[in-house]
Amino acid sequence: RGIHPAVLADRGLDAAISALAARSPVPVGVDVTAGRLPGPVESAAYFVVAEALANAAKHAVASEIGVRITRHRDLLIVEVIDDGVGGADPARGTGLRGLADRVAAVDGHLTITSPAGGPTMIRAELPCES
Image (cartoon, rainbow, N blue to C red; front, top):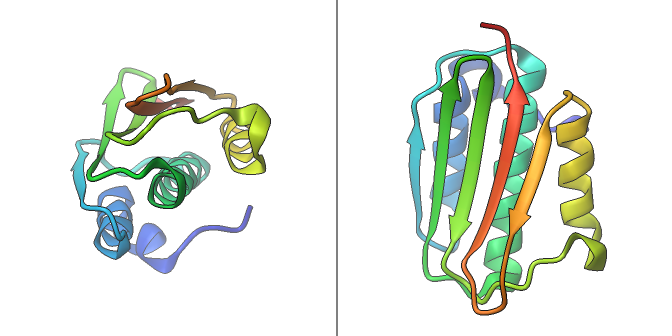
């Protein structure tokens, strides 16, 4: 809670995610096609990406990460995919459980797919106004 940088409030999700990507030690490709959204939805999406990038850099041994954020009707779809070793398990750490809690707080749904050997995909579906 409380993660809401000024760039997110001032310039939106694309600029905020691009700033996160620029600071990542692992190269990150960013594709954000959604415009401005309600503050809680933007904040939740930002948190998902920030935590997923941090986890990938720390645990995944990834050489690249892709972030894609799109809007489909009344859903914001946030996907973060890394080419790391896989094996991400929400039961083994608080970071991924925290992501699920943050997404649930805006009535969203989080899916984590991370088979051994990779890749890992974190997908959040966040409801937003049409």
